[in-house]
Structure formats: C-alpha cells, structure tokens
Image (cartoon, rainbow, N blue to C red; front, top):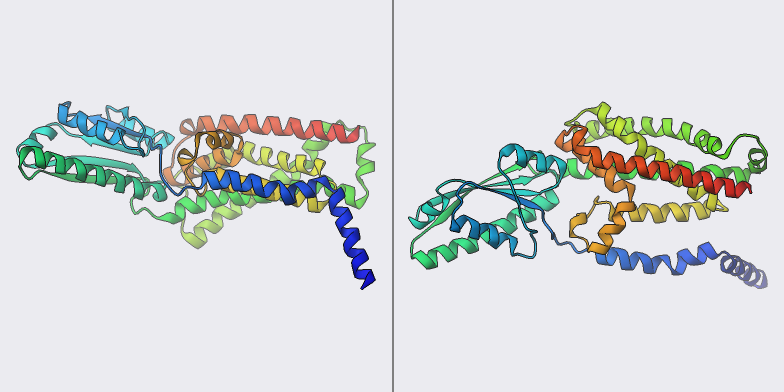
Length: 367
C-alpha cells in the first residue's frame, strides 16, 4: 500500500511540475466551453442573399424589404442576370437569390397567382433547407397581408431550384469537409511526432551539430510527409468514390494543385508543435487542441456566418476554413481557379508564415 501511495505522489509531483499539462487540464476546458458554447447555436443567421427585381414596383420592393428586415437575412445584393446569380453561388458570396418577374404586383392585385423564383445554393443542404423554410414563412406572411388589404385571394407560385445539389444530398457536403479534417489530422500527427521522436531516440544532438541550416532541416523534414500526404489525399478521394459514389464535379488536378500550400502549412504547424513539445504525450495534447479548433471553427459542422462576430474573426487563422471551401468548391460546385483565388492566397500566406515560424522555433531549440 505504501508503494502505491509513493507512486501516486511521484506522478502527482510530475504532473504539477509540467506546466503544459496543467494548462491542458484546467485552462483548455474553459477555453473550449467559451468558444464552442458561443459558436454552436444551431441557428442560421446573417444569410447573404441577392434579389433580381424585374417588376420594379412598390409591391416587389416591399417584399424585398420584408425579407431584409428579418433577423436571419442581411441586406440584399442587387442582381441583374442569372450569370451574376451563378457567379455569387460559385464564390459563396450568397446563399439564396430571389427573382421577381415583371407583372408580379399586378398579378397579386388582380387576385391571380404571382410567380416568383427562389434560387438556393444547395452545396450546403444543412443551410439550404432552413433558408427555404424561412423564405416560405415570409412569403406566406406577405400573402396574408395582400389578402387582408385587397379582400382577394392572391397567392404565390413559388418556383424553387437548388444549385449544385438538386437532391440536397448530405454525403457530398460532409464527405468533402471530412476529407479536409482527415488531411489535417494526418499531417499534424506525422509532423508533430518528427522532432519529438528525435528527442526520445536520442538522435537530436546529432542533428543539432550538423552544419545544415535550420530552414533546410525543416524543409527536409517536411518533404517526405508532403509526398505521403498527397498520396493520402488521392487514396481518400478514391475511397469516397468507391464507398459513397462521390465524384468531383471539378478538376482533380486543380484540387491537387490548390492543396499544396494547405498540406505544407499543416505539416509546418505539426513540426512547430514538435519543437515546443518535450514528449509525444505533449505533442498529442497540442494536436488534439488544433484538431478541435479546426473541426468546430472551420465551417465543417456549423456555418461560420452564424457565429458571433468575434468568433468569426478567430476563424480566419484556421487553415481548414479555406481548404474546406476549396474542397466543396471543386467537389460539389465544380468551380475553377478564379472562384477560389482568395482561399488559395490565404493558404499561401499561412504556409509561408508557419514554415518561417517552425524554422525560427527550431533555430531557438538549437541555440
């Protein structure tokens, strides 16, 4: 019994002396509760939408204003063609577009059925279905108002269309995001174990005494994992096709090209974790932290636009946010390079910064 107490006391002293472990035990739960408890609302808010008003009457403007006054929708962007609607959906700048044809108000005044077209970005079915429900409720309320004013039976002939995913299947949306999550985990774990493994095997001293510059050591460490990560990406895409029948709507070569800097940056942050960890256990703690942040704040599970503004700002430092947009853009929408330029640029900046940070940290370790 005394031996058991002695071992327990020794282990407790070891935990107390390890400040990183204490931080993960007591500080991280509070951080996660604050971030995720605020971010996860289950509601769809701040919906970006557009309107193409071909009627240009008081009634059509009133309908647009009625939608804009709700808590769920932002002020609309005025559109002037189906090409503009398609472009806004491809870039992800809007989720829904309302097309009001000529003669809309006259049809309502005469008590006739007034056609109205609702076009929805169906690449995210978890958002598309609630958005359509919101639109239906607003149209129904507006219809009752017209009936009460004119004492005539007026109705809407709603013609809806879902872009990119007409059947609103959930598999393409979740699987494309899951590919990014798996790539994040694989890259982090592979790279995070790198320097830590050298420390635990006792070969770190040999690497530190070599005349090779720090940045070359970092790049040399990343290169094999970079090659393995791309093979892993191809295997995952093939498995998604064989298991779920998901075929990329866009170019597979484009997807591989756009993935380069995400993989580099992801491996670099794993290598950075490796340089600040004294053991594989600590490295796993850091990897778990990054994985949870990536899963919850990247838009994989919950729309970023529905999160509080201060959390939306935090998501800009989550690389998976940009990579998931690329994955869903190529796999579901079939978009080209131009529509994803912003995300690709962000990943370039991220990868350069992380490689520099990993190199700086490694030089500090050498010092």
